[in-house]
Length: 283
Ligand code: FES
Ligand code: FE
Image (tube, rainbow, N blue to C red; front, side, top):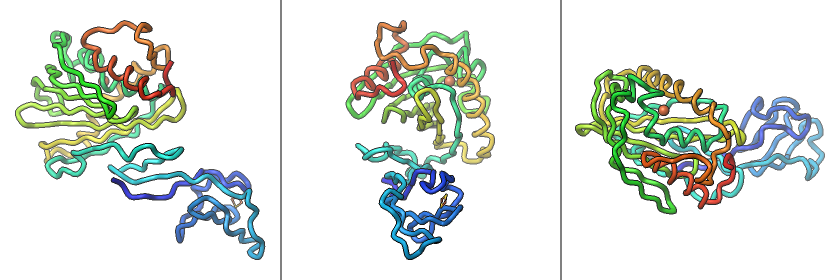
């Protein structure tokens, strides 16, 4: 899945100029300042001021494995252990897709993902939209965890406005985790499904950028901007809460915070990333 592309580090080794100011041509990257030319593997192959001179071996930039997929560019800092995460609705024409974001969080990626998976906050953070304090009780639901991911099913919630249409209803959620920083939910009622796949790019341990793709098998006549504005409003309500959380690094020791039955997805997520050996953004 995904077409291979080339991605290089963004600083020229000659004078530290941003290489993104230059251009790519013939599979090579040309710096915009003095025209040093880098091959796809990152070595400098030409210095225009001295075309007869062989560039020194030290003149090289880092090149990364990267792919295009789901309307995004995916780069791996090392050798990727797996391909792109699955996203079945992306190739399913019965779903329209709307890309949202990027959303910048002054918070770590694990905190942002856990918030996306959180069921209990709807009536308080998204009152009048995704939740209603009069319906705050969470019924039990199932969570399955395998090495490939987490799946929570049977999460039934009353939502005053599940999709921006303003029509309240009970929806049945499925939540899934496909990679440490890739999660999704789908919520359905009467054959209509609204889903979001979330991908979070860590900037560093305490900052991240979230990319969300909405998939809907209904509402084809609703303008994209309206659907995007609804999601921007929801995320705008989540960000201050997530940024306020302390410790900033998600505690993987389950004794460190209090957990309820309704937090089963979050507990599964913490255990799963611990098992996967993820320490980045966690404590
Ligand atoms: Fe890139 Fe000089 S700074 S070629
Ligand atoms: Fe939220």
